[in-house]
Structure formats: structure tokens, C-alpha cells
Figure 1 (cartoon, rainbow, N blue to C red):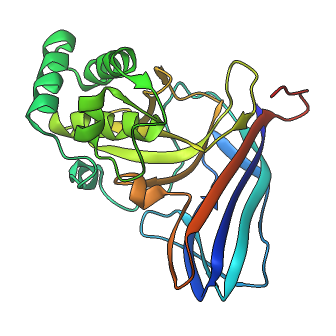
Figure 2: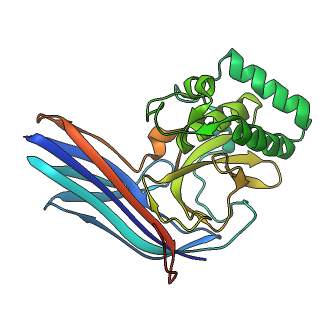
Length: 274
């Protein structure tokens, strides 16, 4: 499948910020199921943009600017994907899978989540792959997609109590339960082509990769209740959202910050609807 993707993030400061530093994880890489045919990044101001790879191998740009009142960061390109049944191949793996058993403040398991994970284990049986698919089904059925009650700092345990949240929250709960079962799991940020034909989205997408012996890393999208397909465009990975966030940084001085995000994901050459 050929995916055409546009992602724009705009910041406004009134009065202007004295300086801004942003870490951008907006550029996808290639693997056996994904080929980046064309990709470009653009910043609205004359700013310094340094590129490197972070510890996980994500393509990362560091932006420094200031003083600044308006800043727009845009990426656009075309990615060719193949459906691999969720199994990931051909990635640059810099750490052993066991690293992704490490809990973070956003993926800690409390007693209620541990009980839920035990229920999933009792239903699925011991095989890791069965556990992950049962977890996928139970989590998708038990949560309601709702952008209002959570934010980027909401932890897995907080979202689990609410039984509501966005794709990031689904991913954090899935990761926490997988790690509780001794299965390495990591956060993935990227983009998703919706099956309903709507291409204009409020944000990027997030899902999970879990490691299964003799199979490797496998993608699970709990917000949609599916394994990853050629509708998923993978951009960055991390232990949780903070390690794979599309844009993350800080600013010095200035007034309140207003941020807006616009994302378009379409199949190249297809007439889209809003």
C-alpha cells in the first residue's frame, strides 16, 4: 500500500518565547514491511535543525530557535507498506528484548491492573502469543476511546481506572500488562490509515510491539483491536510515549503556549473525504 502522510504542529507564544528547543521524532525509517519513498521536514522559521539517531535508532531532529512567536513544524511524504501479519523484520535492534521489560512511571502496574493481567493469563493459557491476542481483545472491548479525560502525562494505571482514553493510553496499559506477564513490550508512534475513509486526524497514532520467542517483535494496535497491517506507518519506538513522542521539548520565557496539530493519512492517488 502507498500511504501519503502530512503532519503539522504549530506553536504560538504571546508574548514571544525567548528560545525554544524541540526534539522531533517525525521521520520514519525503512524495514522489511516499510519503504520510505519520499519524506521531507520543514520549519516555518529560519532555525537550526540538527539530525542524528537516538539510542533506539529513531531518526531524530533537534530544533533550536528564538525569540519566536509562531512556529510550525511540518513533515510530508510517501511510504510504501506491506502487510506482514504484524511480524516485524529488518529493523535495527540496538538492545536485547529484555530492556523492554523495564517499567516507567507511565507504564507501572498497580494491583487492579495486575489482577486484570492475571485474568487474561487464566483465559489465554501460558503461550505468550495467546496471552497477547487475548489482552488485545480484552483491552479493546473494555476501553472507550475518548480524548477528553486523559493527556500526555496520564499513566497506564490512571487510564485503566477511567476505562477511557486515546491510543496512547491503550498502548500504555497493554505495555504494562505485557511486562507484568514477563513479555517485553515497547511503545510505537506513527500513523494509521483509517478504514472508514476519513483522512484528516487530530493527532498521530500509537500502538505496541511485543517480543515473542521464535517470532520476534509483533505489532498490536489495542485502540483498533487488531495486529498491525499495511495501514500502519511506523515512525519511532520507546519505553513509553515520552521516548517516542513526535515533538517534545521546552521553551524559555514568553506567554502561554497554544499548540495545534493537523494530520492527514491517505492512500496515495485515492480521492479522500473529511
